Amino acid sequence: MTDRVLVCGSIAIDFLGSYPGSFADYQERYPIKALNFSLQLGDLRMSFGGCGMNIAYGLKKLGVDCTPLTSAGANFEDHYRAHLEALDICIEYIAVDPAYLQCATAIVVSDTEGNQITAFHAGASRSTLRKLPSEIPDIEHYCLAVLAPEEAPIMLRQARDLKRIGVPVLFDPGQGISEFSREEVRELLDISDYVIANAHEWEILQLNGHLTEAEVMATQRQTIVTHSAGGVDIFERDTAPVHVPAIAPRRLVDATGCGDAFRAGYVFGLINRLPSQACARLGCLTATYNLENPETQRYSFSPEEFSARYREVWGEAIPLG
Image (spheres, helix red, strand yellow):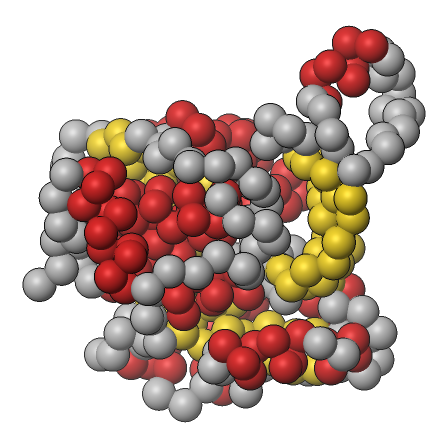
């Protein structure tokens, strides 16, 4: 067994816009009817994204040896390849399919209170050139596989392969959970060891799976439910629930990708066999760095800076052996 982590998930080009006000104020001034509204943006920029690659970026910053498994469109060659190579992130299992001009693409508009409106197109995510986890050498020795948000058929194909190999799975359904069928939800939960979702996704997961909270939790080693500024709750078998508060940022710049950064920090704790409370604290701290910086793959810290801030916030050192 090694400390390597497989990250299955989308690689995307993000277009990030900021609305210089709050959506709530806009709705109060101009009551929205039939979702017909127009926002004048303060700025618009392109950045590197995709849930899978955002998590891989966070893991790399935390010193974790990770392998992204995904597929990209032809525009990966324009800038994204050089970006990942400069970060020394493995690109061997990013299948570039020239049949698709575009990588997956997200259009995200944020207001000044951290609320977001998101549109997403899968792009090359459905490419048949994508490899299965079993095609990666020594995959049976990886300590964890993260199933980051994608379409259910993609996640199921990878999950079934990982089950056959015997690699533990963290299931992260994301916003797409609303499109998952009862059978898809239940099979993915049956295969997974951990499930992580925000509060809204957690409700939809139960609804679409026709399951109660207790029934979902009974299938997992840990169930992690995030509440944005409200912190995170962790439910673990035969253990009292754990709540960890969020960390107030020194400055709020961009909420895009904070959930992915949290997952990177949490996985860092898991593979170091830390208690769930410490995992969540690491996740919250990584998310805060993301929140304080523009875009999803721009935050940075040294190990010393990260450790010092953990101690500053939580009053103790990171409990690493």
